[in-house]
Length: 227
Image (cartoon, rainbow, N blue to C red; front, top):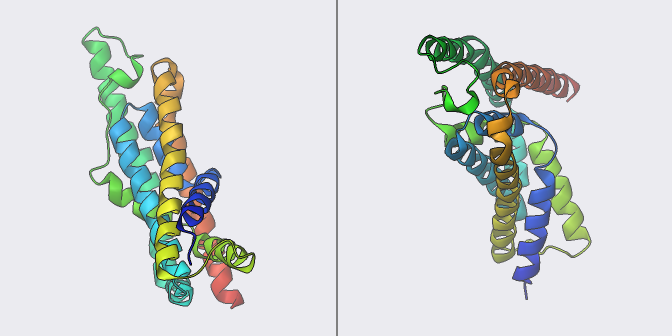
């Protein structure tokens, strides 16, 4: 008989701890929270949690080979990596310009340029989709979850059956979302005092996302050439 509470608990812990290392999702969530877009930050976090839960559910059902085939496809890898680069360029060119214009208007109105999150700042139109794409952009995502699930199965902490796989995947999603939610709440409490960090976060996020995109592109190409 499947131990569903244990599968949920293990999934939660794995998702919570697995979301801690820095990545594109962390960058986007930090930026949106600092800019006062708390609701959009949660939507991005939810998109990332959904993609992690779906991947773990599919692997848990024994269909990891299908995901691996998709994840190693050069066109899929290339699209996701280029998405990160394009999103980073959008932040550096388009969003940064709009923020500077908003600050100039605020200064001209006498409200002061250094108003932090109070200044209207650009936001993405589809934060949930952004979370899904940025979460899926990591080429090691499928491999990492496959290794973890294999470890859990080998130590009899997870039973690869439909019910257990579904509950485990739900735990993963809840854990990932819980970590990002904690980050958002902590940052929201200090965003009003972030000051210069708010102004610099758009440029920093753009640079980091471009670097992630370039890194994932190089890693993907190396994997293809080495296979």
